[in-house]
Length: 91
Image 1 (tube, helix red, strand yellow):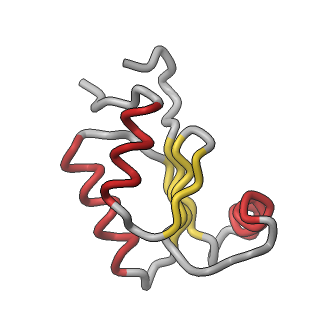
Image 2 (cartoon, rainbow, N blue to C red):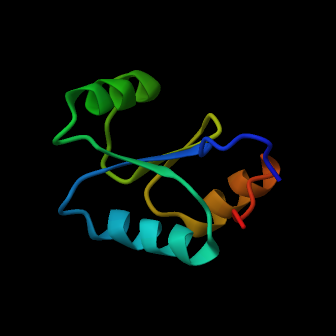
């Protein structure tokens, strides 16, 4: 379990993205805390995402799991990244 209270997962999303909403619901169901950043409404979040992607934007969601960047809602990759970083549900 992580010793930090700050979520190690950041989801870059938009309001209209169904996969973004589904990913957040999945993490909520698992009890995993995360930060959600809307790249349409928050220019800083957009710039932050572009920096992480090297300007190669391909769509949302983009999830940063403790530095591992995962494109799309890919449950196996998300779960593997959470497992490798020891990210567990918050009590």
